[in-house]
Image (tube, rainbow, N blue to C red; front, side, top):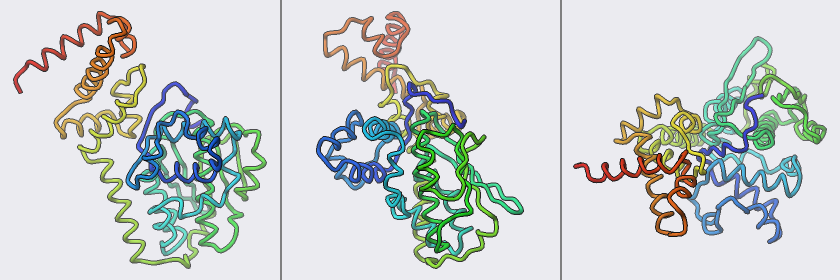
Length: 338
């Protein structure tokens, strides 16, 4: 297994709104279904209409949970045509305009986390087979990551088939989980060979296929798409952007408090890297956490219907005494000269 299922963790990463909109449009064709798919995601109709809006991984997997409950697991397989290269934005463009299938797969391996930061690809070459392993950067329930992996594999199949001009019959799709009840449907949609209970989640291709030239090769368009992907990757690594991502993560945390290790893992960074980039932006994880807790405490206090012990519990403190110590520290910080 890539990760044990952990539905309580609710860890988040920034996600493109594109997949969310695509799923909603195609599976939420009635007002009732649309409402059921949006339930609990926190995504408003206004945000859906905003071109520059993005969402968190929590919101994306909440949408997946809603669809699993509404339609049953395996719903993404009912519309494999959705997961064509165009669905993957600049990543799809960069792959399709590469000079060869091998170059397309190299682009996908290098930049897939720019489009979907919950996963990282590792390429391993062999004499006869090349393996593209996909590792999660954050814990999710199996039903959530399996759906995302099915969608990703359908996208990979679409890119490969388009470049080859025929079905990708030689591929092996490996899932690091037990076969679901709809496994036969997965095999029908993906073609090739589908393997469950594998030690890794991966796509395996014959090495000879990578030499196939792409009929869609376009050096100028490819360069522009790669430049856009580079900008996305750089934005995820800049200190100020790391600070913003930590603040966003803290703003969506539940009552069970995040620690620095969990936050770094959620962001796909080592703790040392996160600490260094926060320092470069003039802050620390403790300062950002304190700031979020202080704001929440103020809102709860202003409501006037909770005791100090109840506020402490809402904020994830072990007891009211611990909460009181934090309040004194916040007060001292506010009084200290800048």
